[in-house]
Image (cartoon, rainbow, N blue to C red; front, side, top):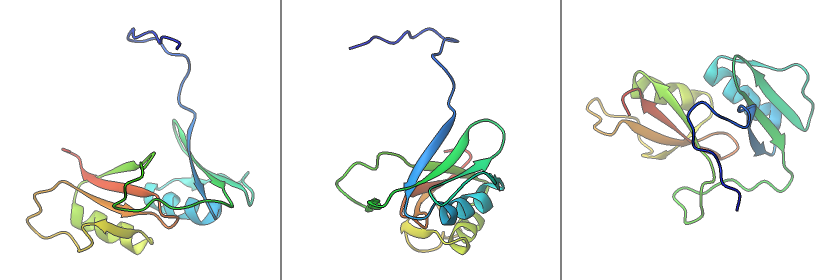
Length: 135
């Protein structure tokens, strides 16, 4: 097994993109484009779309054999995104209006919500969370 240096400030490279497999890259790109306020890169095609913006990229790759994660499930999630929001109620309303499915809990946030995060599925079934900035 190769040992990785654990010295601050050293790296083998920088993160270029996070890519989500899905059945329809344009549909998922539209969802996250609106959610994050980023443009969809014009150079995509039916098999690949990505968002443009500063820093790393979020990409979407067509997978004919894509199977969405189950929630809750016994299989590993492999990956989820955390979206930081200032208010859970407005964050909930926004993501649901864009097509997200509430997973845990499924009801809208109450006025006194003691848990600072909620779980949703994007239109392709990838789990993601909205989290209060303090979580």
